Structure formats: C-alpha cells, structure tokens
Image (cartoon, rainbow, N blue to C red; front, side):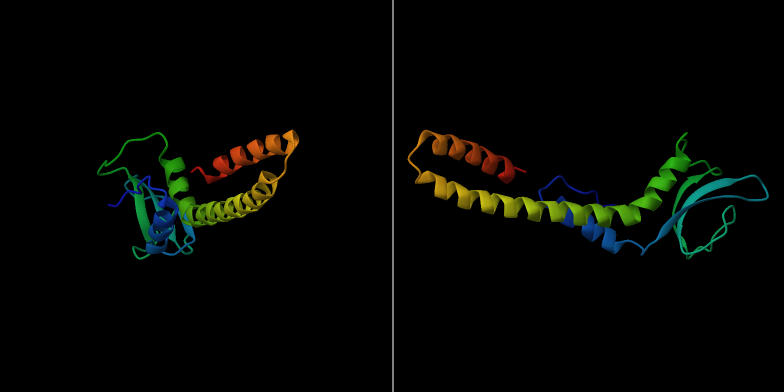
Length: 142
C-alpha cells in the first residue's frame, strides 16, 4: 500500500491516489447477520442501512466482528471518515491548489510594487520596501 509522502507535491500525490480509487460517492454502513456478527463497511451506490450491500459495492470493510481483525471504540467514526474522504480529498486538493495559485499571484503583484519602491528616495518608501520584501519571503515559503 502506498503512503503519501511529505514532498511539496503531496497535493498531486493525493489527487492521483483519489483518482485511482473507486468512484464516489461512498457511504458508511453497518450490518448485522443472523448470528449477531457486526461489520462496518464503506460502499458505493445505494443500499439499505442495516443490510449487506453487494460485494461489488463494497470499497472497504473497516470492522468485522468475527473473525476479529481490529478492535476500536471508534469503528463507526472511522468508517464515516473513510467514506467522507472520497469527496473531501479531491475538494481539499482543489482548495490547496487554488490557494497556491492565489499566493503566487499575490507574490507577483507584490514584486511589481517592490520594484517600484526600490527607486523611491525617501525613508517611508524604504520602510515599505522592507515590509514588502518580508511579505514576499512569507509568500514564497512553503
């Protein structure tokens, strides 16, 4: 299983990972069988709550009572988080990309202002220039 790295291009990695997964929307579900075995799962498409979806719909089983593969008090919350991530990850990637573009445009505009201030002779202009340079450094850092 591939884990996302912490490289600057992690957004592209997250987007590729999301695009490679089953299409959404995903839904969290819980079902019991006649023997009181409980399972929490993530599935796509429509299914009745409390009933097993078809095997083709199941994306992941997050908790299976028997055989006991995992123990957690948060199985329902974990299942809901995994199901929600199908839509959230692409939306978060789009927002990060939008903010990066916005930051790059702001840095470009501030650089243009900075070059105008460099030729200004007075102390106020030099003070503004220092503030602008500080802003540019902040906008350029990741």
